[in-house]
Image (cartoon, rainbow, N blue to C red; front, top):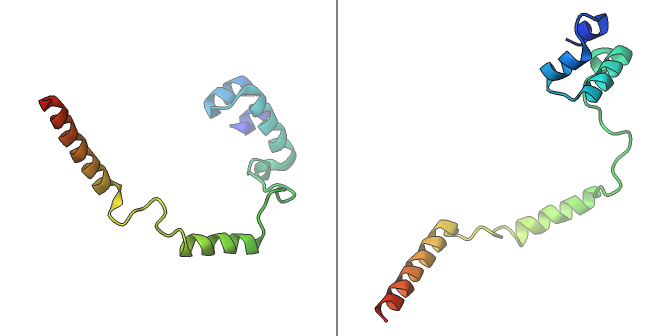
Length: 101
C-alpha cells in the first residue's frame, strides 16, 4: 500500500483511512518508508535507556521481597469469593433483623 502511495496510484489520505492512521502519521510513515524501506516501519528501541530504569540488583530485591513477604498480598487463602459470600450473608441477616424491628 505504501508502494502505491509513493508511486502516486493511491493518495495518502486514502491510505491513512485504509491503514487506520491519521493523515500526518501516514506522511511520517511514508517518509520513513522512502528513506529506510521496510526496516523504517518497524518499531525501534530508544537510543538510550530511560532515566528511571531500575538497576538489576534493585529488581532482584523487589522480586525477593515480593516472593518472601508479599506472596499472599491481596490473595487470601480462601479467596475473595468466599469472603464476599460471608459478607453478603451477614448483611442479609442484619437486614432481616432491621425489618423485624
